[in-house]
Structure formats: C-alpha cells, structure tokens
Length: 269
Ligand SMILES: Nc1ncnc2c1ncn2[C@@H]1O[C@H](COP(=O)(O)OP(=O)(O)OP(=O)(O)O)[C@@H](O)[C@H]1O
Ligand SMILES: [Mg+2]
Image (cartoon, rainbow, N blue to C red; front, top):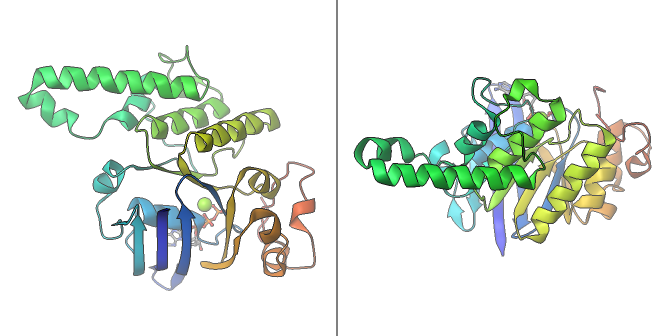
C-alpha cells in the first residue's frame, strides 16, 4: 500500500526551482530516506508535503487522499506530522506543554468555550499522549523543564515527541540527528527503527549516508530539485549520479562514514 505519492511536484521561488518535477512513492510502513546535497530541495519538499509552501505544479497524495492544495491544519489532522531542521519549540512553555501542542487536534480551544467538560477530557488525553511520546523518546522526568534549559540533543527529542504525540500515520523528519553526538545518533536511529517496527511510515532527511543506508528500506536521492536515484539504499548510494552529486568527482559515498559520517555535499558544512 502507498502512504505517500509525489507526482511531478514542483516548487519554484521566483527563478529558483527548489523542487522541479519530483516523483516518488513511499510504501506504507516503510522508513524511506530522502538525501541530497545542501540546497537540493529536501526541506522544500517536506514543506510542500506538510502544506507550508504551495506547489507550483504537480500533485501529492497521502493514503490515496489529495494533500496538495489543502491547508496546513487539514494536512496535520489527516495524520501527517513533522520535525523541523531548525528546532521550533515554544520557549515559554514546558517540555510537556510543547509536546501537548502536537497531541492537540486544534479543536480543543473551541471546545473549551462551548463544551468545558469535553475540553477537560481532551486535555487529559493530550497530556497522556504527550507523556507517552516523551517516554518513547527517553525524556520521562523532564516534563516540567523549559526547552531552553535542555541540552541540544534533548531539544531535538522534544521535537520528535511533539510529532509522535499526534500518533501520526506519516512522520516527516528533517535532519533529526543534526548536531547530535554519535551515541545520541545511534539512540535516535534505534527509535526510528522501533517506530518502523510498529508500522509507522517515515520519510527521513539526513546527510549521514552510512546511517541512512543502515536504517532505511528505500532511498530517494535529489539534486537541484530533481530525483536522480530511487531504490534500494545500498545500491542507490553507489549510483554514479549520486556520487557525482555529492562530490562532483569519482568517490564512494558509502565508504565515507569516518569522521562524523556526514557528507554535506557541494558547500561543505
Ligand atoms: N522561501 C524561499 N525563498 C526562496 N528560495 C528558497 C526558499 N526556500 C528555499 N529556497 C531555495 O531553494 C533551494 C532548496 O532549498 P532547501 O532548503 O529545500 O534545500 P535542502 O536540500 O533542504 O538543503 P540543506 O541540506 O542545506 O538543508 C535553495 O536554493 C534555497 O536557497
Ligand atoms: Mg534542508
């Protein structure tokens, strides 16, 4: 079964063709990797799927339903949740409150005005889901902390918990281990694997090709807003076009997982 399908998806910003005719399919229950050099359009593609930028052309469907053309809250309610490349937590709210924002389906505020008892129940449900999500990412006990007081790696986990609190059917992860230590990266990798084992479909943007190859079932490689390779991860990373895109010269990216393991592509980083 297909969880996500992009057909001829294009997002142009004036003359910048950030995404330009992308086609790929994510199978339900799979962990799919989305890789490509800096500026190749990965984040823009996630923004398009979650409704944050309009499509210039093309069509996106999730679970057979049209996503393109829908508003952000509609897409979120349909079970598509994400994390951001640059962490987006509300500094004045506690960790638990931040995660509850993800559990909330957006109807709570209205309910609070017209049906206080139902609102109280919804609030308890959000709290339970948020606690469950925090436990899943290993942050039990930090509910009352403010995000700013937590180490960076923990803040990234709060982002993941906020997305999980909605019990999404499609989880979009934009470089969830960026800036994490090798131990933390392994832990998050294990978390993503266990989510996949629970049947959650994931689309993972990550620069570390060794990690992506190890974790994912399927790999999509983009360059200059276009898909240049798509298929089995181990085979795909050895594709000539992928090597060229990453390094602009003959090289084996899969062999490049030494120092830091991350290949930042054209403009380093
Ligand atoms: N809102 C915007 N307005 C104009 N140009 C944009 C906008 N967002 C992205 N771009 C441009 O679109 C291209 C793709 O950017 P995008 O952030 O999607 O790349 P990326 O693959 O996520 O890169 P990275 O690996 O560095 O995160 C870049 O040239 C970028 O400068
Ligand atoms: Mg990006």
